[in-house]
Image 1 (tube, rainbow, N blue to C red):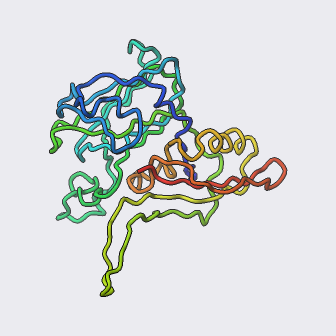
Image 2 (cartoon, one colour):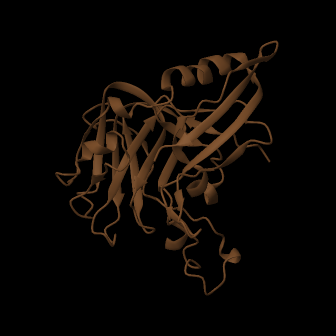
Length: 287
């Protein structure tokens, strides 16, 4: 079986786009989908198809291959359609995803009990997705020279009566030539604070925790190390976001492993051998 290599959704073009279309609350305009913080969401006026759509237009063509709906509130039954255009007037369509599940099937029916709430759908349950920053990634088969991106969301039965979108990531993206070596670490950076009362009891102020990943690619071709990862560190620094998509083929774990990330200081690159460099990777989730 071929090893599926990690994807990094960078360089990111979202900040260059102008956001229009759909019908969005005046206090939560569609332009919020093009900027951070994630908590400052774009919120549709209702859940109707005509409202839950948007168009992101670039001032010039940009290469787009990686996309993600970040901190969305689309229900388990929701669908999304992505179309890319080579012109600002949406006349020349160069990519169409068709209507696809926002929450893909992740469980084969034979792995679930008949009594399970998700036996018929094979999708996550509402309990399983609670507590995550919901992110739906896309890694296209190629990069498309794109002038405009149209996103349509079909979630008319959303119980809230509207759809939220914290950020729409639009990026060129690249796939690692070599994955991090065995022993790479992942987990959480906990932010919950605790205090101890005089009697010894502990009290907690629970706060959102960021997912993290730390690893090393020990023998990456030097051209990749410098042209991609060195430039990612230089240009994105510690403040600019990108998509961390470590296992594109593991649909069942996208909810757990894919997130909008920033660099966390990983230390220095190293010259491993002739034409090969050691590349450190350390990323932290944007909350």
